[in-house]
Amino acid sequence: MKWSLIHWEEGAIELGWVVVEEGNTYRLRKLTKDGDDNALIYVDQSVMNGLEWQKERQDAERARLGSAWVDHDLVFARDGFELYWGEPGGPQDPEKVSARWRTLRTRLHLLEDFRIHDWRHSKVTNDLEAGENPVEVSANVRHHSPGYTMARYGHSRKDGARRLAASGAGRLGLSSLV
Image (cartoon, rainbow, N blue to C red):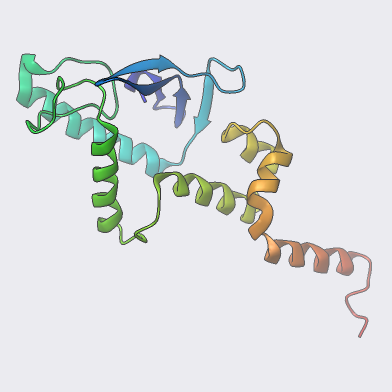
């Protein structure tokens, strides 16, 4: 993720780049999803707050390192910790990202097997269970169709399906039948 692709006012993140490993180094590669070069995902304020915290932390690290920091505009850039090779400000080593995730997961008291991607799954499931429009939910997570989203995430909607059935019976006057 690049800082220049975060739309602070809109609460959106543009999906534009991915870090890929090449031998002993990493590089940025243009990411497209569904053929859309300017894919935006909208996030809630807690995600934006987390990004703001990350920017403040990174700005402090940049100031501490001065000219040693090579700015690549990365949200999750390599810091100046000396045990890892590579320039501060460059792409983060995926293993270090995983280590930081494990630390954060422990601090948040999440299950040990809770992956970063599980947050995405939880968000989609929660949105659908809250009655959000499946077309909008699908578009925001960049799925190719609402049908795909519902097939993947609609499985836990048993309670919603029961409410829908009861509501339909009520509209037809069948709920009073014993």
